[in-house]
Length: 257
Ligand SMILES: NC(=O)C1=CN([C@@H]2O[C@H](COP(=O)(O)OP(=O)(O)OC[C@H]3O[C@@H](n4cnc5c(N)ncnc54)[C@H](OP(=O)(O)O)[C@@H]3O)[C@@H](O)[C@H]2O)C=CC1
Ligand SMILES: CC(=O)[C@H](N)C(=O)O
Image (cartoon, rainbow, N blue to C red; front, side, top):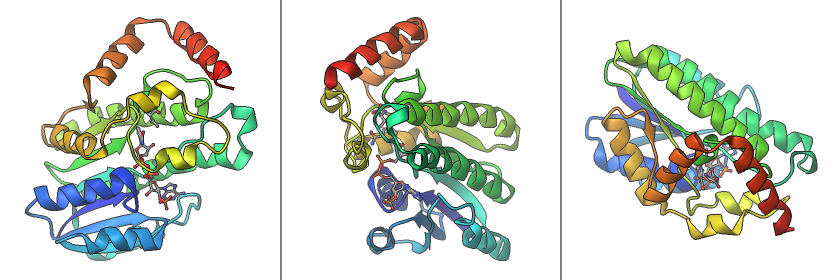
């Protein structure tokens, strides 16, 4: 049995990955969708044409993935694709964000992603794919988004190194690094502070970002960056010393208040 596993499938880009892959891939027997919100995950399942199983999991708990891993061990499917999409970010200065929210970003964005990837690799074969949602926030540190961007730097670094390790097995890892995307992400992100206004000018469409990410993964690309602005930003973050970018972003963060 050939399966695709997608986390964060109850909303935004995770749901979009499920719907687009369902249309694009023709040899998948089942989709295993992972999400925390049962009702919203059920809505995604309803729109799928291929057989789909839902796994309810809150990644703040280390036991959240036990039922899925148990099913992997029972059924022994071939995991053709793993999309690690679950994630969230809180905007605001580190010391103003609650202890739990800071640690939860690390649990959801890094620990759960690493844990599920580790559990899935033994079930992958030649031509399998891993897609990890990093962010353009991985390209440089951002005052006012410190922990979130650090978690995404982890995802980018981990994905690139893992890609090197798995290439000889024919398993390809792609890190997706979008700039701001129009999803429910920002409704939740602004509990402690507001997003830079300029980000709202560059909001990309989630359908286009996900479509490019899938195409880039099929082409075995290392990194998927949607849009000219974000590609230019990536180059900028490579050539401009990060201390200048940090100063500028910090100033902008202060002016926002
Ligand atoms: N939107 C953007 O501008 C960008 C987003 N990204 C990344 O893309 C990914 C998808 O985000 P996006 O679609 O925009 O945002 P959404 O908020 O729409 O989706 C986030 C998904 O992650 C899930 N999730 C959050 N917390 C947990 C948790 N504790 N346990 C299990 N699942 C959880 C959510 O589930 P639930 O609905 O139950 O909360 C939801 O399915 C994230 O990793 C994000 O960091 C990267 C760059 C830009
Ligand atoms: C939420 C994101 O990851 C986005 N790239 C941003 O920097 O706002």
